[in-house]
Length: 317
View (cartoon, rainbow, N blue to C red):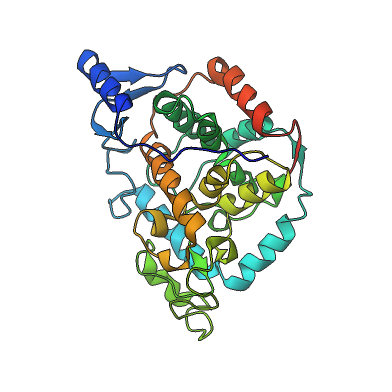
């Protein structure tokens, strides 16, 4: 099944409507009871300027206990994520033999997960999923596939749980990056790559490495984690999400690409088109993080209807 989607629009009536709302109230309250502070508006989305800890979003230098643990996470990730390691993980988890459950059952499992790599939030992950989805639902009411993409984008974090292999956090979360080519300096805490076995491998430490320019990201080995795992689960279970939705799931943590503009020489034309939607999504993934919680039971029926539209009742994980 092919779903045709229009390219995102960044100007127009939606922006005007949001401006009118801002003039009447200091916050936007979504259906799930999630309030978005009136601070920074971009393309019709009102984004908070600081995270739950009072710092700028993705501030990896702010002095705090949280910052120290995040840096240690990236030290371990950069040392241990190698080309061979990722190949092995992809082969193992392609078996999809860890569990059989619905999308919503997996959402509920995320109540047990806290992302150690995230400098912005320490709430249970299901709240982040619903906050992102509800913010998109407000600004893009007709793009239900994008709303559902927000709901499922982090489900792969169940890899930290025992029944899914209880992988260490450095093999599940954090920014992602290509293996098999040089580590771009835009990667957060780049200095720790010097301890990675691939760093001095002449086959892997050039700009293109084992790839050719324009080869397409599908052909690039990206560090293993929840992004690639959830992409694999969705694709192999026959989701009818459009290619842009699968692209978002697979590359939403690829900040060196969509925030810093690195590794673009590896993209093909389809990647470039899908990247436009990832840029839209990223605002909601990042800036919707809040201590104000969504009323889960209130929004659950709506998201169950989207899951039924785009996914089978049970999936192999």
